Amino acid sequence: MIRKTTPERLSFFSDAIFAVLITVLVLELRPPERPTFEALLERWPTWLSYAVSYLFIAIVWANHHYLLRYSTEATPRLMSFNFAHLFPVFLLPLSTAWMAVSRLSLNRSHSMRPSFSSSM
Image (cartoon, one colour):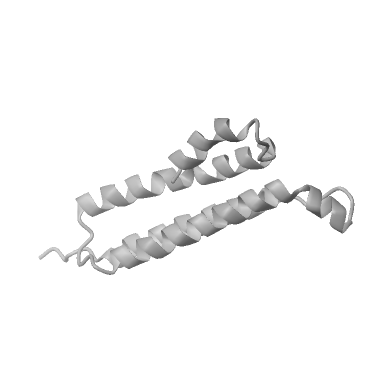
């Protein structure tokens, strides 16, 4: 007799993916050249983009856990939807780095909006 596959393993795999993504985000942060508060403030676009990305990952993770509570079996369809759900989240570090490099300037904000919104 074949056992039913429970969604816990799928949930653990997804947790690992979210943990790796948060780690990748943190690894990209660099301290300012000068050890002053002003130098830190000059990098506000970078810190803001990473904070927004972290918050987004936290919200997606919480929603993911909320939805997986209702599944009773890890069917191939559920696994496919899970991978499809995780793929745009994989693009978040790229979108975050792009926002940080663009400095969130007004003349560039329109060109980066499609990238960040597509990763959501």
